[in-house]
Amino acid sequence: MTYGQSLLSEFDEEMAATRRAIERVPDGHADWKPHPKSFSLAHLTQLVATMPGWITNMLTSPALDLAAGPGYTAQPTATLLSTFDTLVNGARAALATARDEEMSVPWSLKHGPQVLFTMPRRDVVRQTINHLVHHRGQLTVYLRLLDVPVPSMYGPTADEPPFGR
Image (cartoon, rainbow, N blue to C red; front, top):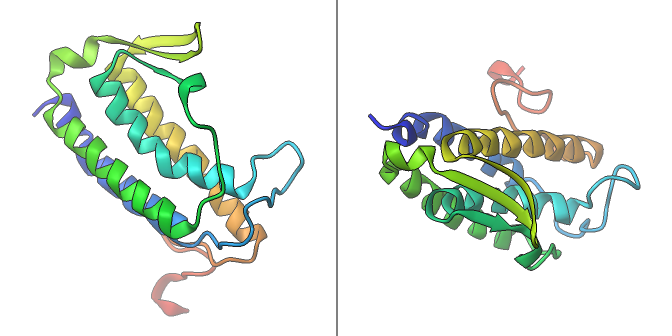
């Protein structure tokens, strides 16, 4: 089993949990933020929905340039779910077929000409899964603050208690 294949079970579980969170994002609150320094709901949801695509990039390209991206826009939840599903499928395929020797290749995150960091692919893929989970956690806080039922991630929530309480 390759390193990429060894991540698939965890990847599948985390992406299923992430999809459950994105599904709950209410349309009509795109500009809402819990604090002036926070991302808007639209920005955070789009970030979470598109991060699986970073994994595909990491396994197929030497770098990602954040400055070359289109930026964030308010999109309906259904559109973001479709994007997420497509990107998850691509990332899963990239992980399943990545050769171990490719996982040691350096990969860089850039912003224009500035290199923010360079790490071996295996490390940055793992870090990106963790990074996505972090932002998904932020998203569940946004849901709670908007009084949207929070889905189960690793076990029951106040909105999805064990055994239907």
